[in-house]
Length: 340
Image (cartoon, rainbow, N blue to C red):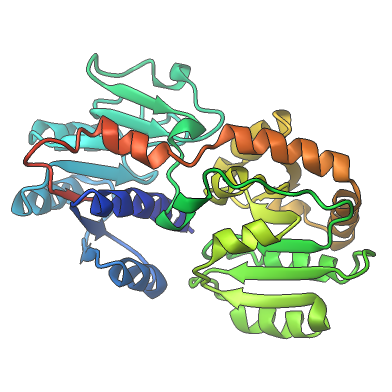
């Protein structure tokens, strides 16, 4: 769990690189697949052997920041509260705080970024006078591979037949297996499904066997690098309600969302309320027969897919990462390095 937090920081780090900077990732815990992904993009990864969010963590992060003469620190994770922010700010660091739920109590970061569709200023009433808020999908952080898809227009097929399934980096509850089973029950001629699993998914072997039993209908891929192409190819997505939502919105992909964690539920519910996606329920609600019926209905309903696609693509324009970099004032001469 937590891959999405790293990936949105990764998107910001890529933009920092493109502007001439050098990002450094300070991570307390991360599976090998995450570390390899960061290093493949020439990003330094520094392990912090400490308990995340505590005083020792803040002290070690401060030391690392000063060692690199870094201009900004970006903090992302649910372990980091008001005291952690105060400790970093008291060391004179410029701080961008990634947030999803407004539960830190008090905010003293220079910038607070909540890219979620339900983000609202009322979550951050208790903050310092200088703390600026970056709220909503206008600031959605998309990785470099989505940069060329800003103006792409989706064509909506009369009958959909292509399904993309992605449940995030790990999917510890193996919801992917139940969706694959559902795909075998969908009564749509010529159905094709691309099932993408992350590098930290512990069920890859069993999922491979399950997909093989579906024949040509289901293809399983691990740790893909062409996810925008797959989203453009698909007629319908089935996805966890995490950071992937903003990628699917950019490409106008009608999606059935499943919340795999409690923090994903507000995202799924608000996207459904705005008719930008279809909310199936939580990870415990995924019955393969009900999922098959939902998929079949959506694949056969062009009008619903068209309406969803149009609204979703208006929500995310793909330029959020540029807006955040601009707010960080990269133009300063000493803004060269950024630990995350």
